[in-house]
Image (cartoon, rainbow, N blue to C red; front, side, top):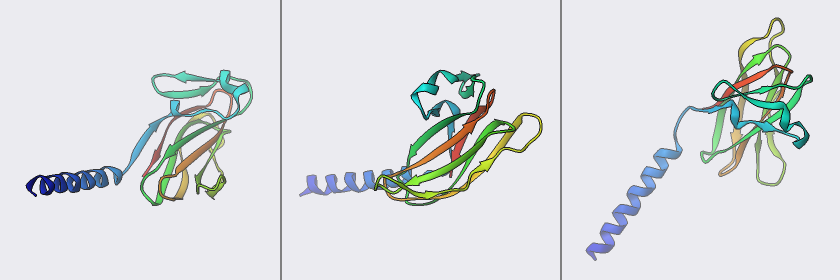
Length: 149
């Protein structure tokens, strides 16, 4: 009986520890987590500095990243981007093979190319599904990273 009680305590502690870990707040992901949306564009994206991704082609290309989420609920998202003619949006997947919630397309400010943080909106996440980031990255544009809270 004592062995069963010990096992129950260990299991209960494991559940608490897992719950605490999944409720982690703000998370930062590097730009190199993005990849080309189309295989033919893979050569356009190269590592910039230590962990950013840069579009070295002469035209705008689509880059995507997906992050699995384990915490159900609404999560604010942002993308740190260098540019003046790029855009990003976020989507959540509902497990039926289509986007469950699509956010508004957020554009960089016009003017000279500069580092900007795009508020890509709050996305509702279903249990064990993902947030997808889609960015149209202009020539010479850089994605430094992205965040989920």
